[in-house]
Image (cartoon, rainbow, N blue to C red; front, side, top):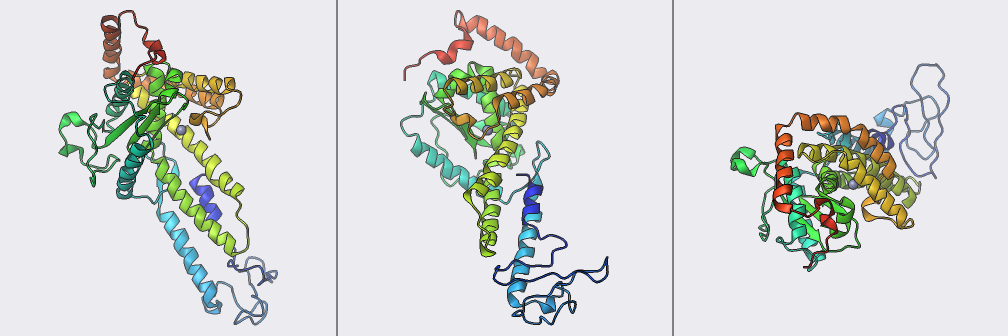
Length: 382
Ligand SMILES: [Zn+2]
């Protein structure tokens, strides 16, 4: 749901003079005697000051009882809070509600890091594992090309209680030039071939080995990582937390006035339109990130088509990565329309020409008879 639609859902209509209250206390709105003038409302007989139709405006605060004044104050605060926390996503210009601060995100980063360590205990591939190095190499290229920060050194635990923000809000001038952006990221390559998924939020990037065959090669993996890092860069997880707060407030308000707020409505308002907007946005940002890191832009729509085909071949059993995602064909088409922009990004980057030459030399010299496109299909022992 867009921020403006959500705003419309919660704001008090400009011409409404009726404040929310239980249905057991009805009020009626007589017709205006003169067109163009203000509407007049007579509150119920039990309402103090109700002297009959046309004798006072509902906007006259002196005629409100205490409950109406309290609710008007609460309503004004909620609308004011909402409007004052609207912001634009820097990468796309989309307006949204956001009330999670970078400082709170730093705490979430630490908490989610510890949670991931617990959740995947014994399943995270070691830093020197070929697959970890493969994923690490692609991730590092994406992060550094867009100055988003660096991956934490392998085997180094993030110090507890650090006040380092996961988002790049630090001062890059205070860092040595080779470090790049201020942000530190952590990578978990989880050894589970049954999970076709990857995710990134609050500085933690998780890649399950089950998605590597779909990635096929470095370009396909860059498509996946670009998309996930795109979610993190656009702070989508914090946006969803923020929206959830609004929905809870809305549900409480509707419940108070006697309108049931079903779980279906929550799904409609929160899950589908919202996540699809975020998915298309992550696709867009991800395509830019992987292109800037000189990966093949064509690999992005191709990778999503492969995911879609895999899902079909699994007889409708859903793939984790595609949950709440738009249809693969639709997003693949949208990504193809972005290809000219992606190639323009690469044409403007002198680094991309040299990377292509370097990669060709690397393959000829070091990989010998190995086909890099089939590297992810090799069964690696742990
Ligand atoms: Zn996504």
